[in-house]
Length: 246
Image (tube, rainbow, N blue to C red):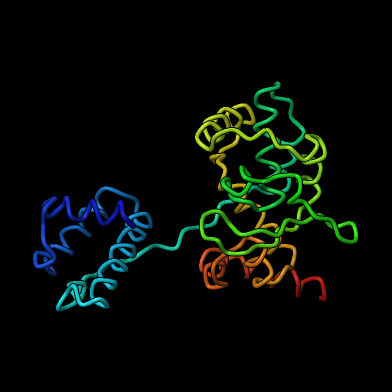
């Protein structure tokens, strides 16, 4: 929020007063964002700016809403994830010591749904087992929302391999090395940390796990977030589930 706010005031003037926040200025900044970023990235920044303006209105710092009439939108992106076959290619390949650790971190994320920050702060005491099921119950680093991540077999295998102490590297390095791994696997899909998280959620949904359960596993702030991102997958799940009966 602070970065968006600062960028907005730099757009007007670093020393601008709230009186200078007009409808025209808002629209001008929104247009600038959409030219500089992808549609959904720009949309996210506009939403943050609108929240800041709403805060100013609620605390009587602004006399009117300069967002009235300002148009901004997002596009519905197709969810990209790895199939079980693609995951198997990665899991069964030997990339050498350095990239094997990167491979294992990716497989752990794909089997746990953890965001990078949550994986990076994981300690052995966080791993719990009940009736043979491994799970992690914590609050997300980014949002402080509680999650209960059920670990799939590939995540448990990675944990066991490293005696519950994952060989974590920085997120930037992880994504950089994943590009190398992608090239070695000759994959068309871009490998990155967040793709593993999407793969986990998609795998659960496509295997009939309810949307509200997936939302809890992922630690989304609301089931609406899960529906907005993964709702398009429901069609496949419905066809698959009814198909089993037929």
